[in-house]
Image 1 (tube, rainbow, N blue to C red):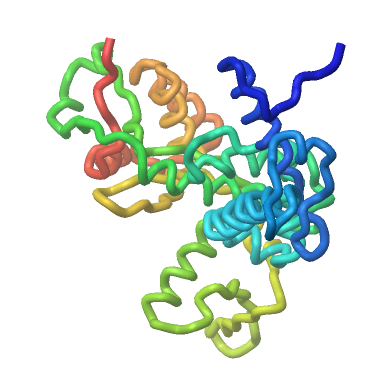
Image 2 (cartoon, helix red, strand yellow):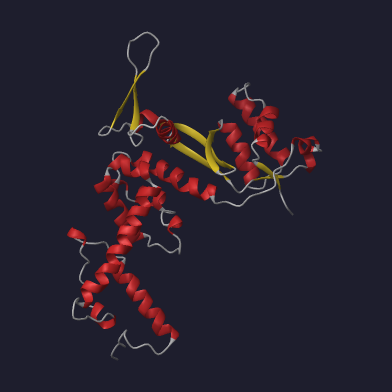
Amino acid sequence: MESKRLDHIDSVEDLKNLQRTFFDVIRRPLLSGDKMAPDERVPEFIAGNAVMKPEERIELYAQQYWWRLLDSLIDDFPMVSRAIGESRFRTLIEQYLTHYPSASYTLRHAGNRLADFIRIRPELTEPFTGFCHDAAMLEYTIPEVFCAADSNPITLADLQADPTELNFALKPALTLLELDYAVHEVLEQDRLEKQKGRGDASNVLEREERSQGDSTAERTTNSGFSPEKLQRKCFLAVHRIEFSVYCKEQSEIQFMILKDLQSGIPLEEALQSAAVDLQSSGDSQLDIGKTFQDWVSLGWLTKRLG
C-alpha cells in the first residue's frame, strides 16, 4: 500500500503525523558548517520557491532549533561548559538531545536529564565526569527552586507541640542534593568575583598552598581546571528566600533528618533515627534543637497536610 503524502491533510491524525515528521527532521544534529543533514522526506511536506529549495527552507528551522537550544543550555549549565570546553559541550548537548529530545514547551526543562545522560555517556565529559554530573545537578536545581511554589512555614511556637503530633514537610522551594564535589563553591566564587566587578568571573578558582607563613595564595586561570580540588562529600540544601536561591551545606545527619521529613516520616521517628546515628557516629557536636530553630528561621519546614 502506497504511503500517504504528508502535504495532504485530511484529519487530525494527518496533522499530528506531519508535526512529528517535521520535528524529527529538524531535531537531528547539524553537520559541519551548521548544515542540515539530508532527508528524503523534506520535499513531501515543504515546498520550494523561486529563491530557496525545500531543503534550504527547512534548514532555517533546524538551525534556529539547535542554535536556540545550545545557547539556552550554555546559559543553564555554564560550569559543565567551562569544565570540558565549548566544542566538547556542544557535542555533549547534541548527543544528549538526540537521546533525550526536548519534550517540554519551555526551554527551562530542556536540561532536566543532562546529569543522567552524563553518567550514561561518561566518555563525553572525561576526565571531569563526576564534576560535570554534580554541576549539572546543581545548575538544573537552582532555577527549579527559584520557580517552585510558595508555602506557609511553621513557627517556633509550632515546635512546642507534642512531638508525637508533629508531622512536618519541606517547603517546595527546597531541594536536597547529595554530591561528590563542592560545585556550589564555584558558584559562590563567581558571585564574589562579579561583586568585585572583575571581568574574569567565569574563571574557576584554583588554590595553591604555598610556604608563605599562614597565607594561602590564590590564582585564577582560563585554561586550567582542577575539579579534584573540589572533590569531597557534600550534603546540600538548595533553597529560596524571597527572590534569591542559596546553597547551604548540612551535616550528614541533618541531611538524613531532612530526607526523612521529605519522605513523610513523622518527626518523632526521624529524630529517633537521628539519635541512633548520632550515637553510632560519636558526633556529639550536633545540637538538634538549634538545628530545628535554624530550619524554622529559614522557612524550610511546613505542616504536612492530610
